[in-house]
Length: 306
Image (cartoon, rainbow, N blue to C red):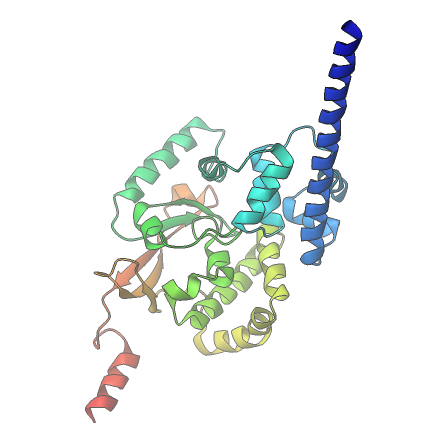
């Protein structure tokens, strides 16, 4: 009886070990397959993650002491995974689906200074009281906080692993498939965002986040051509990027039918307290569109009248 028990326990242990090995192999093939699909080296993925290529090699081989949600979400972003692929990643790595609420918490602004934490908390309350969409970014355009009006504006956007508007506004405008539905005349928005990317890189050339956006621009033929040719010509004509031409009125479509199509002026209004933290606050000033507000519409109206 005792012998049978030990044999049974041994078989259970062997079965469990085999299952773990199979799971690890699935994860390894999944990560390598995704990396090969993107035509990225281990070094390039490691650069996106901000770790050494040796460390990423261990990640890809499953040699990780503990897969935290933060590591897995970072990996999903670095390998540009869809929502379904991110779910598979979690299932292969930790045997469960991801937790969206935790993902939001991971990307929430953090500070070791209690005074700064309290200030950011109060500032978030103040922003939520505003009726206009407003958000705070760092130098790489990662969104550090956004008010309710901003979240409502993009409430219908489908989940995307790297280009959600509440995570990085430049990535949203450049790469998210839903961006053209909200940002009307999307090509002009993209030119302004490419100009902003170039302007930001001039000031923060070593920023890994900005460099990663530029690398991803180069991977898309149309965006690469726009960045290298169309955008410089556009800047020569307008002399502006996305932020530093506050007179520019672009257009967007609000999800609420009662609001609908709106003019949009992007206004920077950053208090010194945020500047010291390396943050910038931007507000989308929404404008009712009529013939009095846009010269193009006035010209169109005159042509129809004639």
